[in-house]
Length: 260
Ligand code: BTN
Image (spheres, rainbow, N blue to C red):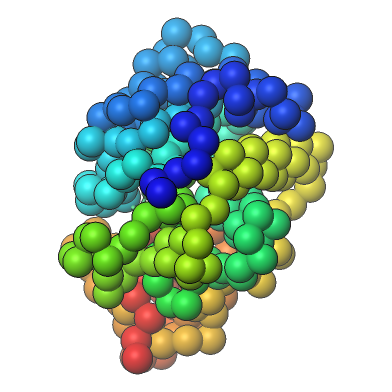
């Protein structure tokens, strides 16, 4: 069974306990990428919280120009927000924590965050997050939070990802309700966003959920590769890496690999 329900905008909104996140759903059974569709909507002035969802993506994309596998049974969504520039660094924290919380609430599975925003179960990727913004000077036109969760994805059907990816159905040995995971995710996103808007911080919880702190890592940032101990993260989300030569590197964006 690929997924039990066949999601629709009406079924998602019917019992969704949010005020604005997900209260407008644009659902496609097949789409190239929810990111592009959400961008078009944001440029047309879509209400905050508008969410584009695809049953499957044929050109899903990840960070650093990577492709994102997004067949039927996985969850692919992009949420439009209009935050102020001061909240921009916190969106990574917000999205990662919302995914961790909603996976646990829906399935009981505990996941961890690998800096900056990969979600892992048993060391393998269960979810990827892509945030794209349109910034003009000190103003943000919009921010799009793209989230892909491997819900009912049989990794055995995709041999190339078996070493690096897992899914909720693989972990549990049964399918999981896409609707339940999605609704919990939208509720958590709104809850955490409202914390930010009312002056709260997500930094401590995000920092404490990171799997890499205190561990030996290799970080690729652009063309530069750093190796050392992941010492801490700063409030702006950057990684503080104690390199093996003793220097401290502050890495704003990159891709981290845990060394054995
Ligand atoms: C990554 O791990 O590199 C990020 C993956 C992000 C995938 C999601 S799926 C929904 C949205 N649409 C896309 O094309 N990408 C994001």
